[in-house]
Image (cartoon, rainbow, N blue to C red; front, side, top):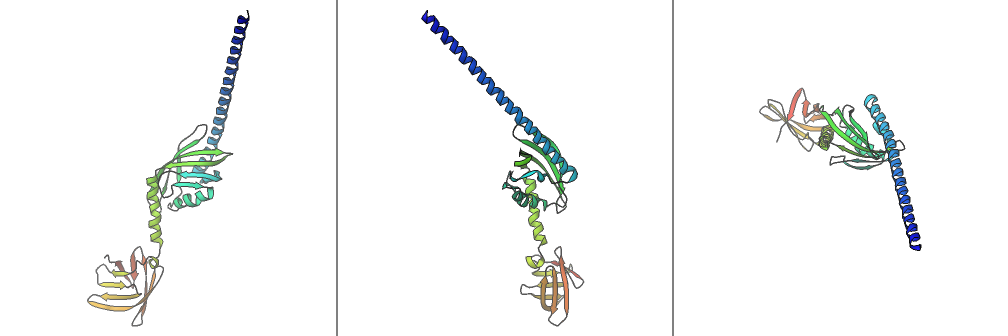
Length: 262
């Protein structure tokens, strides 16, 4: 009788434990499901927020980056000149956004490809085009992996065609070199000739010039001074003249002179 009672109590305890375990698992499952639903709902709201800012950017020219948190972490993937991790909105705008925009003569025109989300990220996929400072078209495709908190973007990983971006950023160096005056670059030093080579106008490093005309060597000699792209002459005989450099050409005394290649 005692053995039967012990067996009964054991089975009852086992049954109780099974019920408790089941209820615990069910509770955990419901809790996880609730968290998942809540996360998805929050992510859906974030997606709608991103959509709103993207539409404003596309249609009104409003900066998309207005939505960035001041302490945002923005990562530009790849190995382009601006690839890297930027801590803070100001740092990102100053060292990544502005250098790119300086290479464009027109604003970027974005076109949405897709906007999706999971429980953690909003995925913004779009393409954009503009005209570069040299007149050539710039086009790229972007995928931004975004985390939103309290209606502000706090983290982004940006994927794009870094080759296209690298080619665009090369214009910065080329344009900077072009914008430097002839005085700064010292590209004025050397022999300048007319198309028929009748006039051979040499600018020497010591701010002296020596000009040949036809068979007359050293027909004119004197000093010159430079200011930006403007050049002033004082001939040894006393007369003065001037000229200027533009697009690699010297305009002087009604003549057009080209730099002689070595």
